[in-house]
Image 1 (cartoon, rainbow, N blue to C red):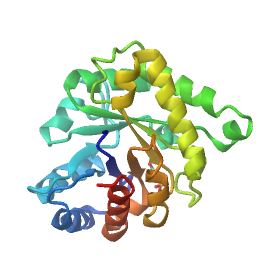
Image 2: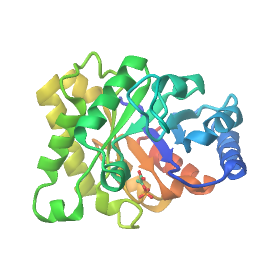
Image 3: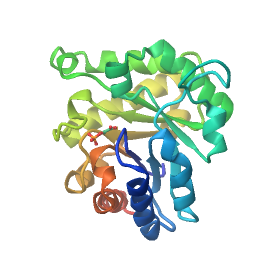
Length: 255
Ligand code: PEP
């Protein structure tokens, strides 16, 4: 069975004191968990959050990375720097980076390659806009993002891959995909992975759902066969809400 993975994407929120307080509240409750749990703070708080995690079972992730390892790349952060501050995961291709910052599949692929080569674990985000969904292009868009992001990397290289399906219209809008809508796309993603890499690999990859996940809707989303956890934005900023999602996930998966 795939171990469910719930990760919090804090985006550009919280100050240092708030970040430490939040992770301490989580650490109190998360000493050993059936569900894998991670937090992705802003770069500047990674070290403080790593220290505050202590011996709790909470993984540390970054929200982005650059593909070069060092040099004249003003403002960028490398995989090696993230590893130096105890990061294990990196979110790649989040819709805000695609649609606000303008990242392309080509750039995301270079970052993914660097992440894999460094030993960090990628969380590759894919998802359609509302216009693309209404035009019946959801599967085509998701397939292009998967193919573009993964490129010609092999199943052996992608052993730690996590995918997050995040419909853009559901992110930060309070409007989540229905469990059926989400499951349909998750099934499609697993089918695509099966065709490209074979069933053994496809069955091992965790596919998170992201988009307005809350304690009140997490249970029915996580009960879907191909949904293996959540990437959570807004609701990961409050310990009680994030813990509620983790508990609902454990319950939905019978853990
Ligand atoms: C996200 O940013 O990945 C996300 C899913 O945000 P929210 O939960 O706020 O919709």
